[in-house]
Length: 139
Image (cartoon, rainbow, N blue to C red; front, side, top):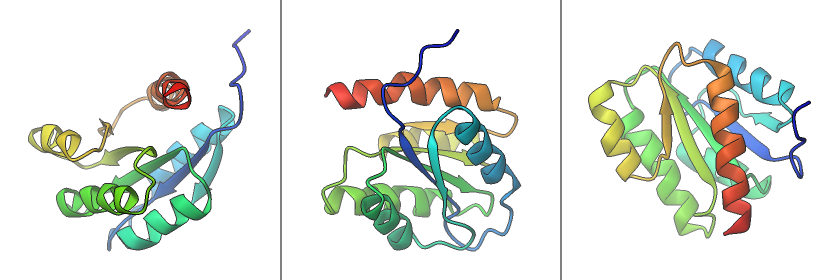
């Protein structure tokens, strides 16, 4: 039997920019919900400002960003920057989508803690969040 999470963690799943492909984001949102997370999916075509505002209003523990349009190098760091500017720098930000391997270190340096590339098992995302979030609560 798996140990229950101490509380329901709230995760925002968002699609920044003009990208119209949200199947992967919906798959991740469903997997997180099935694993016991509270998930808020913001839908397509969100601005970084809308995503940061939602994370703050919903008192989110994490934000998962998905991008297939190639704009991840601009959009993902902007979400992190806005969260930090608004006093929510403790929100865990992770991402996924069509992201070239060479872009991942720069995104991580900009505060996106983990990038999950296409084909990453949803169980890997769930396990990473379960490991990462209790550490956040303790800090």
